[in-house]
Length: 251
Image (cartoon, one colour):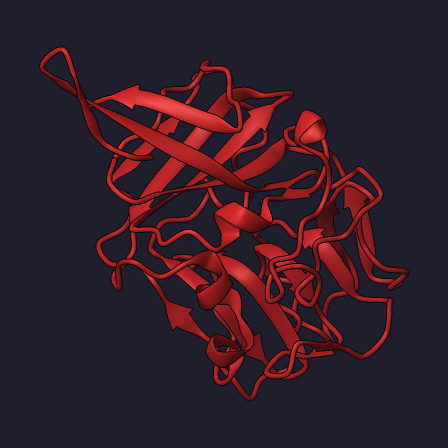
């Protein structure tokens, strides 16, 4: 979002940085795309397939919105203000931030949280079923999750339990170096669950965008998850709104 005056009101705009579709054949695992910020996908398919806008990824941001949507129609959103303003997502997810990783990047929880009354699959949604702040680059053992909520289970750094769940995950990587160990355990989205390695063998994930790991259980797609960033505007359109590459709001 950017701010400007429009007939006595302030107009803000948010820019689409990433879209995750957990069932489109491309995997945004922990080691793919986040640290490099290279372009993924086409603008005309930005809200239907995995997408990363390399230019937006480099924009300084003070606010971030995670918007769950159904074919571009918003059904749930959380907006947060970054604790340290003015850094880009390329900086926040880049190699310098990945070691030691485990950054809690917001404080005080979401400044906006809205869910459509008809929205489904909320009880274990990795963003909308848990409270707290955003944590980035959550490295633990040989695992990593790029975006998680502090209200969920956050594994200790030395614990290799495959039990922190969010967006952009891998259960077999060197998270401090952004290296994948094999192609079995990367996955777009895992739902909130208590399924520690050694005592649980059914990790519930959304869609089929995951590796060949025998413990993965492909489940329904709750929606696409779009990530927008802004420099100035603290609000996002309400559920039912139609999303686009750029989102304009009146404050």
